[in-house]
Amino acid sequence: MITNILFLVLLIYAVFIGLLIYGLIKVSTIDYIGLQPKTKFSIIIPFRNEAENLPILLDSLSKLNYPMELFEVILVDDESEEVFRVECSVFRVRIIKNIRISNSPKKDAIVNAMQIVNADWIITTDADCVVDKNWLLTLDNYIQLHDVAMIAGAVTYDCGNSFLHHFQQLDLASLQGATIGSFGINKGFMCNGANFAYTKCFFQALNGFEGNDSIASGDDVFLLQKAIAKSPEKVHYLKSRNTIVTTRPLNNWKSLFHQRVRWASKTSSYQSTFGKGLGLLVFAGNLCLVIGAGCWVLGVIPFLNIVLLFLLKFLVDAVLIYETNSFLTKTKIRYLILSSLFYPFFSTSVALYSVFGKYEWKGRRF
Image 1 (tube, rainbow, N blue to C red):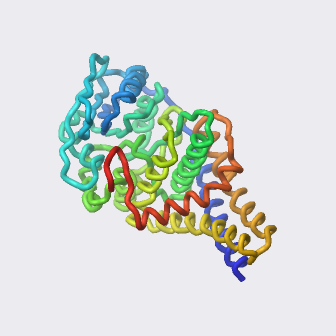
Image 2 (tube, rainbow, N blue to C red):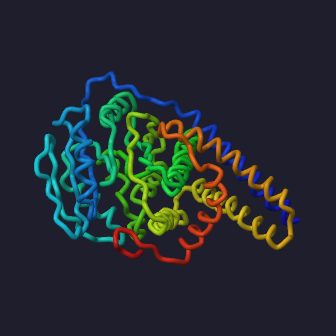
């Protein structure tokens, strides 16, 4: 009986992941940069204790294939322990202090920066990121060719050789695959604030982060879901290798656990019914393997059934990850089987802890 239930849940899981794979393939890759640049951008970068990473990001911005007079950078210092200064720059950079008015430092940082932006289009990214030289040019060309007010983009990791790094890349690939795939089936519900663009007037029309500013994370996802609920035709996903933003993976399991708890903690507050349902289904799919493993240890179900359960989930996950990873990076997939064996236990722990526990991020507890 229990085996049949586990197989049924994983079969439903496989069907939905299959839909996401279809959506992922359906979204065309666009790298067109043939138009003369016109769009003005304000790039907002909240940061806290990022003196090591910010110079690397600013250096990548200085190499952008885009007119320097058409973009500015606003760094929002969220109570860093050391003062960060920009010595010299070929583009306009301003540093402002974050003024806390809610439970979300990042949302506050964006709202504060909004008061001084000099452009129609806002882009948010993170201090530990690096951008492609054609990042803004591709965004500009897409904006010129489409009636759009909000654009989600891709994020990937710059991985080392460790299992921890590649585990994060595979996890991120699955999230990015779900993101792109959901847009492909017109059910977009997720994005990444490290590569997220929208017009200032659209942000204001949505009343910004009003309604979810009590939640520490979600400056990207909640805004996206509000936008799709109001004007879905204005919200696009730009699947372009030119606009992929690269960030650093975390270097210890504790930080990774707390990061994923932070991400998972906002799922219950999603406005998107599809997003909530998919989150619940992903949790159920991973929980099935954990329960199955426990039942095998207790001698309730045979080992062959565990193998079949694992293969059912593994095969559909592997297709989604492979398709996404081939878009995100040239890095070869490593530790896929080992990660797939470990992930259900990691993911289930994160999901349960996000409901009952607290997490640490940037030296703060939430």
